[in-house]
Length: 155
Image (cartoon, rainbow, N blue to C red):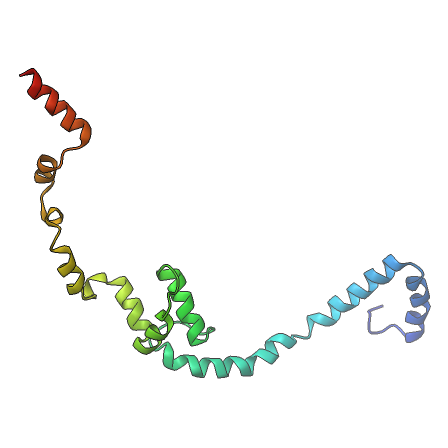
């Protein structure tokens, strides 16, 4: 006999036996809730309208990116955490104005970033433009300098 074909009187006879023990009552309750939950998917049905609203807002911010489930600010924070060292003050606003796709492109192609200000500051450090051989000649390591001094003293 299948579950649906049994008369109600059959179930009424079983219920007092089940409620006699707390453990069996809990097991029955869990079994019924599992059976009932198989056909009902409320969270997915309730999230569909919210996903459409979120997606329409995100389409403008994520032009050209395969992001679908995040708000623009969540996506920017995610990208900053994954592609940089986390957000600094003003980063989120700057990326929002620039566009997330353009910022990601900058991160992946560092040669496209203007470094003229940095290059001007580094002009004072001539050693950055020296070859390895010239660096070793002009700036020997302390132990090497001691050895060279000992050799010169012996000669």
